[in-house]
Amino acid sequence: MKDLALEALGAATAPGVSYADVRVQELRERSVATKNGKVGHVSSSVSLGIGIRVLAHGCWGFAATDDLSREGLARAAAQALEIARAGTLAHERDVVLAPEEKYEAVWVSPCAADPFATSVDQNLDLLLAVDRELRRNQGVSLAEASLTFERRRQVFASTLGSLIDQTRTVTGAGFSALSYRDGEIQKRSYPNSFGGQYQLKGYELVEELRMLEHAPRIAEEAVALHSADQCPEGEFDLILDSSQLGLQIHESIGHPIELDRVLGSEANYAGMSFLTLDQLYRLQYGAEIVNVVCDARLEHGPGLGTFAFDDEGVPAQRTDIIRGGRFTGYMTSRETAPLIGQTRSNGTMRADGWARAPLIRMTNVSLLPGEQSLEEVFGGTDHAIYMETNRSWSIDDKRYQFQFGCEIGWEIRNGRRTRMLKNPSYSGISTEFWNACAAIAGPEHWTLWGTPNCGKGQPEQVMGTGHGASPARFRRIRVGSAYGG
Image (cartoon, rainbow, N blue to C red):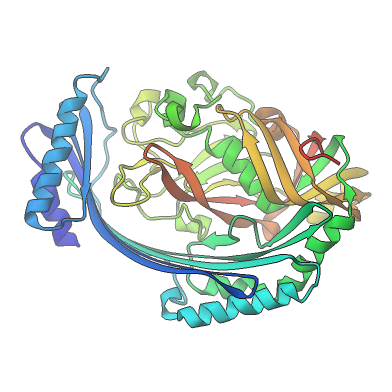
């Protein structure tokens, strides 16, 4: 793969090209799922190709191919150059890149147990055992369980002289129970909705989740929700579990800080951002206890946004996004960093495969743990609503006004759960919500969640991101208006 990368780089280094980089990527995937005692699907795929990016005449050009012959690489390099030349007809200013060093590195993510060393039969045996345990409860109408494995090796080479070989292994696992009764569907998921938990780990993640052990509780809650009281409507103190808070971070902090959204590059697909350039270092984004970082380093944890170098060859970094409640940083690229007066990219450019050009993408955007105990989070108010596990979300095209629904809620009185609530939801405005943060649990309750399905770009790229959070409490949030009684 290194030889391919260097050969393609040589083909891309033509007259008029001021910079070029190439990514050779090999991707292996396996997905296994069950549904009500039967195999839902089993799929396995392998992909190998190369993406070539050139900067010529002040414009970007990109082309990709799975024809890895010398002729195929030459054609792709020529096409990238042709696209860059065509861009001169419409560009407003020449692309200027922030400087970066040359790096030569080999990096492999930690993986204690190779997931691909397990057989499909082993995977199905586990999922079917979980399925049986869920459907042991007669009120469960539909049981679903899944495992997802991915190994991605990429060799990056650039005209700066960088040659970087990275391998990342990702595992995902989870299950859900749905119960239908009297025209209503209730659902509970473990350990999170939308496929469960995903991390930069091997099969050890599946073992850590102990899915079979948690199946009876999840089934029982799905059925019990039918008899639960409807979530009340009004203003309440709101406590969110860490998984729901992870999605809140994703939508109301992660997307708004993507600098290409702010500058308008993303407007055609998924909107822009309320975080205009004049807000940097001025906006009081949240309460003083709110501290958020964008951190791709392995020290932050095994997140889907963890790596050693991004897809521009920039090292993984930690950037303060919100410090003491104040907005302090965007996610940048080598092209966008100079546009806000910064001398270096903070390393957030990624592509979802060899056939796509890299974009600014969330790495691990996380709320740092607070200093409160879990008892203080729940006990710091006489009356609150606690919500777990996302069910639905909606947010406007500038990531400002939002509404979220959760799978299950609980009424909290004097720090204790009193009654289960069905169809819980809450809504608000991003900055008002984060300024209402009153308590954040400590590091012993902090989890780095994986969001595997973040979409961005045209053609769409689906990327995995990470979001760490501890349970937190927010003052006087609008609750209960999303679902009818």
